[in-house]
Length: 191
Image 1 (cartoon, helix red, strand yellow):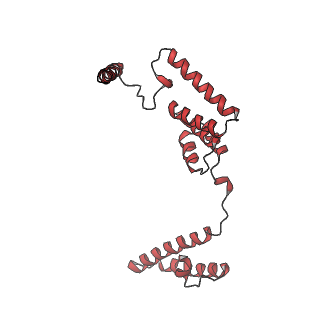
Image 2: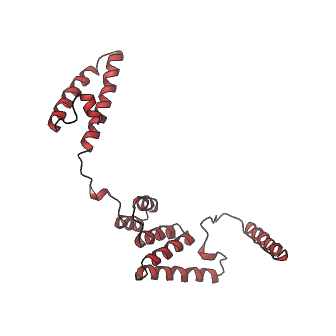
Image 3: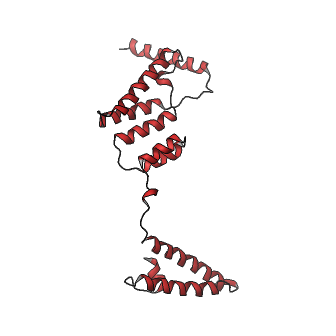
C-alpha cells in the first residue's frame, strides 16, 4: 500500500503507528506548503498525495454499508418514483439475473414504452419461474393491451416501436409500407 512507502514504514506497522506518523508528516507538509515558490508548491503536492494514500488506507478497513448495495427492492422503489434512469443503472449493477431481475427490467422497458423488449423480458421471467403468478399475469395483461392497440386502429403493432418518432410524417410510413410490399412481391415473384 502506498501509505507505508510515503511514511517510510514497514507494511507490518500497527494502525496506531501509521496514524501517528501520518499526523506528524501532514503537520510538517502543511507548514512547508506556505513557503514561497517551488518549495511550497512541492510540499502542497506531496500533502495531496499523502492525504489520498491515507484515505485509501482508511477505506481498506471500512466495512461496506449494506444499504449502499443495489437491490431489487431499491430498483422497485426507484421505478415507483419514476426515476427510470436510476433504476436502470442500479439494475445493471445487480449480478444475479433471475426471474425477478427480468421482471424489473421489463417494467423499466414498459415505462420507456419499449414494449417488444418489455415482453421479451417478461417471457424470460416466466420461463425462469413459471409458477410465479405475478409474472404470468403481467405478461397476459401486456399481451391483451397490445392486442387492443392493434385492433383500435392505431397502426402500431405491439403498442409502439422503441424507435418510434412521434414527429415522423405519416407519408414516410406510407412510403415505407409501399416499398416493403413491393419488395415482398418481388421476392415472391422470383421464387
